[in-house]
View 1 (cartoon, rainbow, N blue to C red):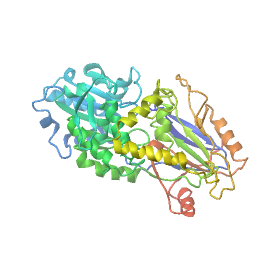
View 2 (view 1 turned 45 degrees about the vertical axis):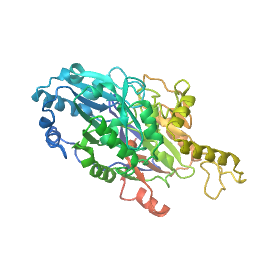
View 3 (view 1 turned 90 degrees about the vertical axis):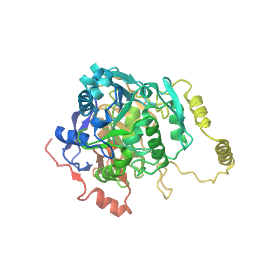
View 4 (view 1 turned 90 degrees about the horizontal axis):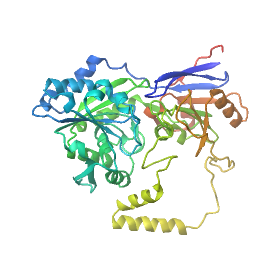
Length: 467
């Protein structure tokens, strides 16, 4: 049997799993070629030389109430590697840990588990600092409006501090191209501000170069408004180890950071594979986030391809209040519609209404293309479901099926399902994304080039071992 080893269970063990494949399957693993993890000394050196800013010692002069903003567990950022170093520098500046406020930037995500802060920032900060979990629906105060017209509602606790430092991760993102830098500010805003940001800008697309995108430019402006001029952005590998770190003013470093990330995590698009497997680690905390961050390679398969996702979903279904997947909040559809309409101008509302009427009055063409059918229309095979393999014995419940997803807890059952879908074919071309939430699939020019890229020297071939 052929086998490979993957990581799973971010924040809940971060353990390895072993997958076996039938001998006739031609399995290729797309795994980024990343540099070695940074040492403790390398992290300290980068912290001592923030880009475009004076040292932390200078930043702390005359300050007494600093705030550290960190992302939540839905982001794989290992902030606990950095936060203790920040506390040490605060102490050297005469600021005790009990004067430091740590704000978990949840954005519109669900309420974190009770031990989320301990996991994210480590025991020292969790036991000695003042801890705040952001709630976008309350405890926010309006501080003004951006030049784009967005009213800025921000967590009140941040406004009570005299120095604001962010710690976040640089990973691909749908709306901004990449997370990290000033995007962390979105996580401490009120729901109205977040709706403005999401629905008055077109998304930059997954892994797109959104540095000059209006969404990113407005976030830069908001970061300045809330005093978050210094952001530590961490880049991790497929084992959730820090491989690069940027510190200082994000406007100074973010362009280079995105270029580097796009280069390291570029991957081929799966247009010609028979089976596509996406490992959603290190964003496999919940089904909502695994689907949002880890299913990207499954959105552009070839017709008839089988689709597999691997996700521990240690915290169950999860929640995103703007883009919920399964567990919709009460009256979500009505509230969502009203909020979206509230951010539009009269001209935009009029244009939306006219577009809606045009779609309603448009005459049918008489030709129906079923999703997943081949381009010549001869095959009307609907899209196959995503087989979600959930390894390990998880405490949090998931339903056996969700829209477009079938839950399976045994890998052998996944293999059998694929063999049924592929009509018993023995030789299947399988493409496996080892850490899909970090990877940026790109299209290749022709199917021939795609085949050469997928199954040529650019990928790692799984060796065949005796079972």
